[in-house]
Amino acid sequence: MARTLQRGLLPLNEEKNARFKFVQEYGFTFPTPTYPIDKSAGIANYGMDGNGPDPTLTVNGGKPVGDCGVCATPAHANMITAVMAGLALGENSMTSNEVVTLYFTYEAELAGVSWRPPATGNWVAPAGLDNGVDLGDWLLWLFKQGLVKGFVKIQLIDLDAALATFDVVMVGVNLNPDADEQCENGRAWDVGPSDEPDPQDGHAILYLKAATSSGPFVWCTWGQQQPSTLAWKNACPQQAFAVVTDPDAVASFYSELVADLTALNGT
Image: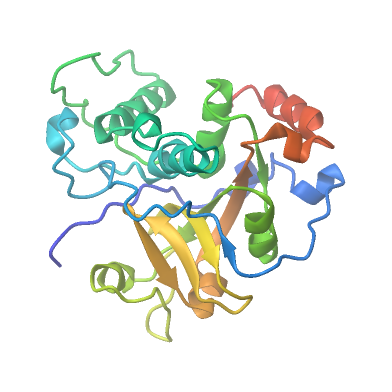
């Protein structure tokens, strides 16, 4: 391979995941989705953000890290919501250095390490902090920091309906062994009998497009739009959350959702 593409999502922890309610538990019913669905905001290049070879990354010695969760939300999610709100993309995009700095700020806090990334300089993070994130833990930390307005768990069978309803749908997947090669060579993600999802190869991505209920589908990963087949969509996603960007759109249960997330206190 020409590049080494990083991951950064820990294996799904069912006990942790059970802390969060599915959107239907708030009395919300998804309308039937109308296709095509497109929440890409027309962005072609979302930025690698340190989740692979990235010449714009200078902190941490320029070394790629397992920050896919941070790339997905808030970095790429912010870009999408900014464009949809009519804001300038450049003024509402995180740099690779900012994304990696946020990642190690979280990792240090999670590990109980007193170190924090310096405000300036080409720092290198202490060994042992680049461990990836649990999807729910990461979103809960962002909520606690005021960096997201809320998030709610989505059933995998509702991915299309969630995409039609929310602007940001974050998905945790187990990648298939051929995923890197498929992405590198401009091929759609697909799975076959000898290319099953690997539970130890977790990756956090955003769901962007569904042309029809049977595909093709498009995801945001490694800074680009990556298509997939229906077979891949049925096999590789393991968990999903919708990130609330407009509380008015979920006014019927937003207060209850915020109360539930606040009660978890970021733990």
